[in-house]
Length: 103
Image (cartoon, rainbow, N blue to C red; front, side, top):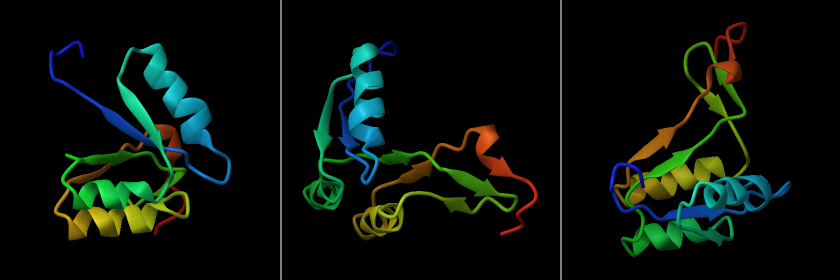
């Protein structure tokens, strides 16, 4: 990476629309970021074996109080991260925030 920190990204395929396989993996390749495309539920297995240092995922919508709405597998990914003491972060671009929804 530009900062000299070794990075390898595990990209979920992100079913049912496969945004991870079609968009995220393409973006990683375009920026020269080493990555591996995995099936959606493989992340928990990788966390159990100490292969994941942190989880970062996006959000489809964010409420005014910071709650996030995302794909069906997000909750299980968060539980796996918590169970394996892996830091879990949500990248929330400002256009995803809906200030009209309180929670």
